[in-house]
Amino acid sequence: MLIESSAASAPESSTTPAAEVAAHAGAMAVGDRSAAPPDTYRSEGPGREVDWSPHDLVKHYIDRAGQRPLVSPERVIELSKRIEAGLLADMLLSCQKSGMDSAADPQVQGIARNYDTAETKALLVIVAQEGAAAKKELIEANLRLVVSLAARYIQSSGDLTFADLIQEGNMGLIRAVEKFDYRRGYRFSTYATPWIRQFIGRAIAGSSRMIHLPSGVTDALARMRRARSALEETATGAVTIEALAAAMEVPVATVEQLIALNRTPLDLDGLVPRRDGEVSGQTFVDLLPSTHSSPDEEVVNPPGQEVENLYRHLKELKPRQQHMLELYYGLNGQSPLTLKEIAAEYGISSPRVRAILNAAYAKLAARMTEAED
Image 1: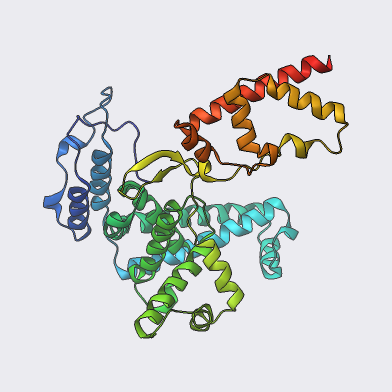
Image 2: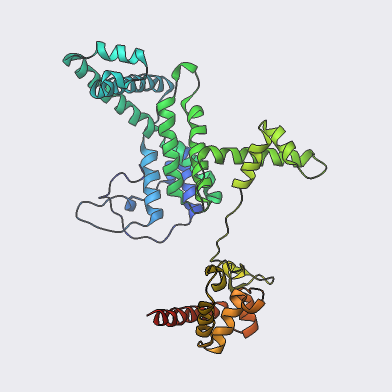
């Protein structure tokens, strides 16, 4: 919904700061036409292919959204009735197409059977088309509402761009249009605002985590954080899991599970930070002890000759390769050392130690294969 015509073109312009676009969005949301982008953002005719910058696209979209006419409350009710009728017509047509038994509601099955004629099917198609047109009109009339709400999340959007926020907000607007009940008497914008904010908030929460969590878990984590903040303001000591569970009105096991899911994953290939704020040349995986089985552990009750052959092949390696293997696997009664500890003993880097061990593995495997042949 962000780009209405892929053939639209505009001359190149300098990158516009996000703050300028957000300010423009706020002005457009309240109907200030003086803040509209210049005409140069619009297409200058067919056959002209000029690149758009991302900010130009957003400005163009905001300008087009501001040109959509607003609808009166009476018009909203009329459109809502058409949308409701169109959704029902779509349901009946789908039921007739896939079989009467596909509808879970017996009442819908009965209505579908009553409309299972050529004339009524044609009428349902017309009603469904009118409902789709009404849905489009109500959505386009409230695009500026999405823009104004999305502009408030720019500072906390993380990796999401302003265009991404608008796109997610439009998804919430579509959901609000489909579920709006005009009989309750409140304004459509009042009903749509929580839906738009929910979709934008969930998108931000999902993009800020390395591992995506379901929306229900994300909402539960937000509830837990709010409950913890409220307890910290009144509690004299640390907030316990039991108090947090009582405040959320959930079992203690649920809170423990949420705390476990809220942990930030650690990239083992990431560089280890130093105390001075800089990063070292070591990765987190270099700090972990070796999980490889030593040659002694991989050979179950070997004959004495095979053990002698293994140590004989070890002695055929270069002294440094042999010593590093002994240190890494804890041979000859020694405790296994990590790559970092071996690197510190030799005064070299951990990647260099890993390369030497890999060369030793290859040479040792080749010697043992030759001995078997």
